[in-house]
Amino acid sequence: MNLFAVGWNLAATTRTRLFAEIGNMTEIYPPLDAGTRWQFTGKKSYIVSLSNAEHAVAPRNYRWHDDKNAALYDGAPVDCADQFEAQDAKQLNENWDRLPTDLEGPFSMARVHQNQNGSESLEVLTDPFGLVPTYHCRCGIGWIISNSVELLRRVTGGRELDPLGMSMFVTLGWAGSDRTLNRDIRLVPAGQRWQWRDETEEPRRNSHFSRADLAPQNLRPMCESDVADLADEMTHACRRMAETYGPVRSALTAGRDSRLVAALLLRAGIAAEYYTSGELGSKEIDVATNVAEKLGLRHSLDIRSAEKLIENWDVASWRLVHQHDGMVSLWQISNIIDQPAKVERIGLGLTGHGGGIAKGNYTSPRMLLGNHSAKEVIGELKNRFMKRNRVLVRPDARQITEDYFDRFAEESLAEGFLPGSLPDLFLTFERCTRWQTMQARKNRCVGDPFSPCFMRSFARAGFSFTPEARLGLPVHRRLFEHIRPELMEIPFGQPRWPSEKLTIDVEPTESRRSRDSKTRQSIPAYHRDLRWPLLESKAGLMREVCLDGANEATWEFVDRTRLDELLKNPEKLEESGTSLASLYNVVTACYYRSCS
Image (cartoon, rainbow, N blue to C red; front, side):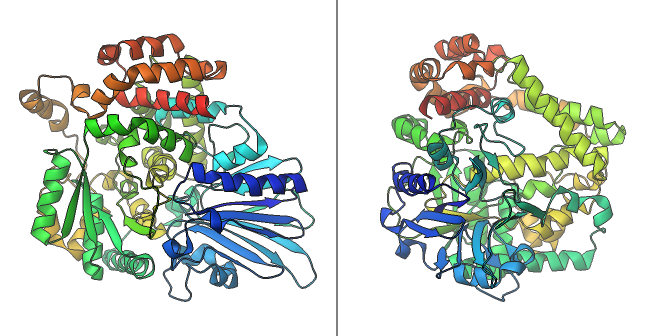
């Protein structure tokens, strides 16, 4: 990881504070090496950074500079055209103008350039899906851009909560749009190139990939040759990533996305180490183990247990909230409890994140057949995400979130999308690019994540099909058939492939409901989640931190009385209609406010 901040038009006192505060960030990110702290000062520009030790990040060369120019990045970019080494900041500087079209993978980068006439420019570039979240804020007449909200907050002192960011987090579980939980700090959107010049205070903003690029008028239907080309592009990207940043560890789950990644790695001849996280006896473990055995994969298990979560709660909760600026729910705490304090080598972890872009996960067959209006489609999405948090989230915060759903629909329709595509767009440009990208960065100080599903070609392939066709998983189906058709026959966690013909299937709602009732355990579903005993054990501590630590501003978004009641009596959670995940979202927001 390369923690960085770049500034434009900053006062000398602000530069000094930036340099000091980035050095203090090792308390939040223990694997970072204080000896790597670096700075560059231009005419109007300023850059600071802090990374893992040089031997740990090799072959990454995060920083380059001469007397007048500088470049740096965070992440793991790859040039799939094989024209230059994208892990070298010097080569990034030399090929700067081609980067927006040629690079794939997770990255955020900046360059200071002095022209022959002596004028200076600062540019910031984000990857197409925002896989390395990057933020900006104003500082007087100047700007600061960083991959850490906490660093920006420490330098500027801003503590006021952002109404939209906070409302969306306690309601949905992520801060959406371009928001954070801090009013003064916003996200630099994905797929952007921002440029400041000598004579400007505001940056010139250009987009190299956005939602509008997936509008129907910009795409043509996917044919057989397109399938072969897509398989080749995704395979080549995996091979280049492995050659550059390996060795590779790849997640293997009970689902289709991670198995598609495994198919690509096998096709590329990459000897990856596969791992599965979960509880012993879970479907995730059982299905993944079956796949690994049949394919002869090197496979290990990361066994999760409530006892382990309880034992590590104090350290892990503090680290999760601080490293991710309150924007990753404590619901995800099991993913960081084994984070080491020292890293000998930064690794590369492959996942199937982003696979939902091409699967119609939020689309209802009944709605598509019914030719419903945009208002009705968005209404169903609202209900999907907001029905289990009515008790804890205050009405005003829910309304702010609902209003955002409406704006999202209006903007998407104006770009040429039909109502039936709204659920897939929301999944792609909210759930994937805000929620899932934050999840992928939970251990960013010990390794870089990469998913071939977060490639522009994969997204274009998914949206080349109609919303009705996407329900049949056409991209996954055709890629499996082209690469490794036998992988379709090994059972998944969800055993059936959906029909490619759009029909209203009553089995999931009626037959399955009857079938599941015969096999469902007698104890409530909440009690079968390993985070339930964690809640029972730590509810008193959570209540103390939330009620004593959070200030009055928090209760504009969260119902303090109801939260107090549920943390006093967790057994009433199911009766209240509140999901366990929703409670953890609210607790996370309170933890963030109490420690920031």
